[in-house]
Image (cartoon, rainbow over the protein chains, first blue to last red):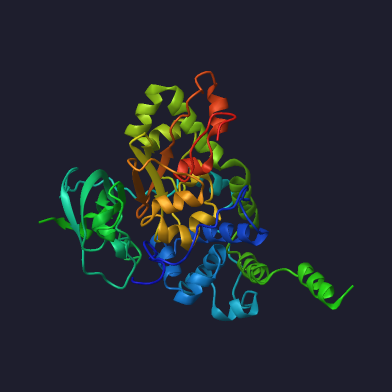
Length: 220
Length: 207
């Protein structure tokens, strides 16, 4: 999806806002958003890819003007309404529909603390022949769809070299639609900065990204 | 009290707008039984106190003092990091990348905010900023100068754009003059930024 979340290489934002001795949370409400966002995932109504896509679909002006945790809160409400966990009327009223019964949260503190060290691995233990080997030159896709993808715009139709093989991982483009995992081989592909940014780029600069097999074709 | 002061005072006592909105969402989710408030406290507690860059610093210090550990870390970072008790959410698949005189690694997520939570905790605001996400892949030396870091021109700036569920941990160079330090003393020198690649590690008293 070609929206403003795809920020790599966009110029004009200015220097990085470095903050000395930055606290983990700048406001108490930020920590509440983090906790809600993690816990609502346990309903199994979405996955990390659909979750990311909910943020990417925020209106571009909002995406750029909201703070990070405001974006998370907005994305959480949107996806929770979309998946039927809450309704628009409930959001507007700030309280549950009196006709809806109280539910039981899918995870308690004990369940959460045993989940955290495991997480949700994206690797899949399946047999699949890898199309590429370390050292291969590959060209990234030129065509892109309007759904969720992890091929950044600045890396499209560019030639790079496979530097690592990560095994077989869930493909975000399909996973975000919640219809299938569609696992395929994942590779770290390294690009010379001049291939990405033109001849004036620093000769001692490379960019490496993790790209799925279906994003890649043999170069040449 | 002037009118202006009254105005400021009134505002400072009121919760900010996002705080109000977030409280409304939390009330709804809790009252509907969608989230357990005790589980909320457990998450906030974990990321406020237990899961932070002090974890990654232990990995780096171990790699500096124990060549066998270093080689396991470079070979299978997920397993080597789990040896020290760090694993899971937002760090399910780890890769360690080592800085040398020839190569300086920098990690960014241009598409969102991917970051290795088990070893570094939650990302700082600058890591999630449009400024960093936009510029790190295009002008890494400019970004480094915002952090006060200058590298030799011949050093490769190797930027890793975290586009998948692989999380990268930068192993900074061990500073000279630290041969006599213990593993714990070394860990205390390792900063969060040095494990993202926007900082270097210095010996005590150095800068």
